Image 1 (cartoon, rainbow, N blue to C red):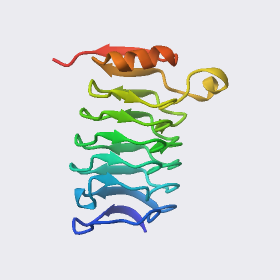
Image 2: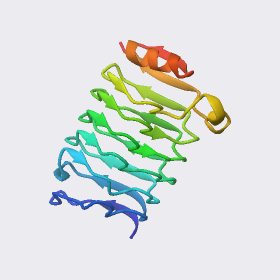
Image 3: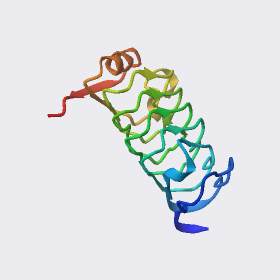
Image 4: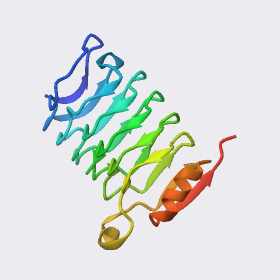
Length: 172
């Protein structure tokens, strides 16, 4: 199937790898699938994903190596982004972690073209190399210029330890 696909609200479960290697342009995922978004898109050619309110966790490797993925719209109900959830999504230019998210796993949001990642104040755990690596042999392969950090001392410390530039801001 190609084009836009809306998973029906009547769907309660999707089996692992159900959408692997698909060529959909956009997918809309309803909250009816439950609180955890399982790993069923890895290696797909999906370009945009929109997840509805109610989903709280993006499972390990859910969008692993979705090299065509350009845009992700996450709901404010997301609490956890597990390890490698968006690892290898090489066409994404920016990524917004929703307010309320607390945990970002290891190697969870990586892609050589990501320029900005927004980290809200709610994040209190960031895994090893959660974002594109800025040091050692990877440096030339990474576009990430800055972590946009909203009033979060934990994220500032993470950025300093991993060699990222930081843009701090406060919402008024």
